[in-house]
Amino acid sequence: MKKLILSAAIVLGSLSTYAAHVPNDLKVVNTLVMQEEYTEVKVEEVTAAVTDALKIAYPNAILDKAYINAKKEYKLDVTAGDKKGNLYADENGKWIQK
Image 1 (tube, rainbow, N blue to C red):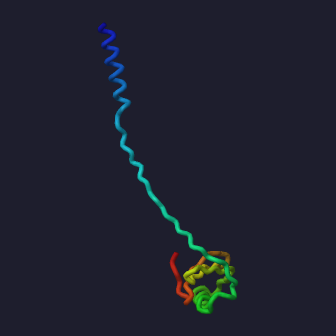
Image 2 (cartoon, rainbow, N blue to C red; image 1 turned 30 degrees about the vertical axis):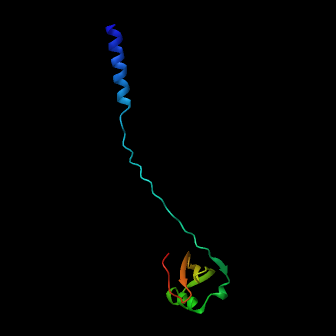
């Protein structure tokens, strides 16, 4: 009988060590990505203010493609030397940070 009580105490004691609470340090981060709709336009259709601003800011840049959105903001695919990139400008030729 003593062995039965002792073995029951050992089994119950060992089960309680597995039931310890482990804190959860995971944090949920929600990210919202809004993608603006740009439609491609011909390079010739870009306003003179935007092309002039491009010539002033980047004299050796070549305008490859141009896109416009509903807010009349331009997305310009530009090549300068061996580098390619995107520039954003409003219809008045002011640069936009995106």
